[in-house]
Amino acid sequence: MPWDRNQMAERAAAELQDGWYVNLGIGIPTLVANYTGDKEITLQSENGMLGMGPFPYEGEEDPDLINAGKQTITELNRTAYFDSATSFGMIRGGKIAAAILGAMEVAENGDLANWMIPGKLVKGMGGAMDLVAGVPRVIVVMDHTNKHGESKLLRECTLPLTGAGVVDRIITNLGVLDVVEGGLKIVETAEGVSEDDIRAATEATIV
Image 1 (tube, rainbow, N blue to C red):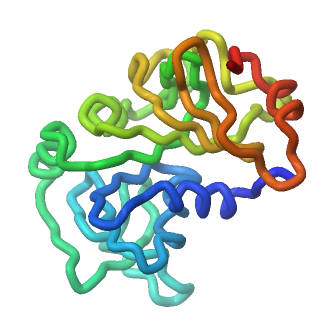
Image 2 (tube, rainbow, N blue to C red):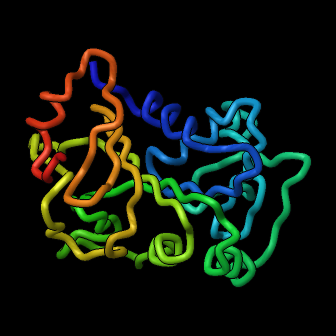
């Protein structure tokens, strides 16, 4: 069976290493905070928080503690707060080891489209453009296909790009793929999913 959202987040959390500072995008990536376990991972939010804890239990929410996606979160005993300029200085200065982001489309050369659909109201790109430009490792977590069953892993993105050639690894509900020379390489499949299943659901070149 394909992975569900929580299994995808748990698999993404397995990518993280002790000592890393990590930024989580909105959507499925925010769930990664629940699966860091005993690793010494410090989560950074571009709205000015370093050291995010997991989501609060119902009834324990603090409306003043939110992530970049406006979801309520918890703080840790080492949490630090600062202004947005300092936060983006960390991102642009290469201090964040990895970013885990959602996406609408990823191209076989690592192009990423995750900030807008033409004709729909958007408030802006947010921090995504800075993240993909300033963070050394970009991991995308998303469903393999859209609601119409069409591949979101494409030869070329059709939506406006967030960044060109920036994606390193893609974790979908079907498995894990790396961006390599010439296309995408299957690294791992979800339990019960075959490599043929992934190939059939992928428009991009699989090498």
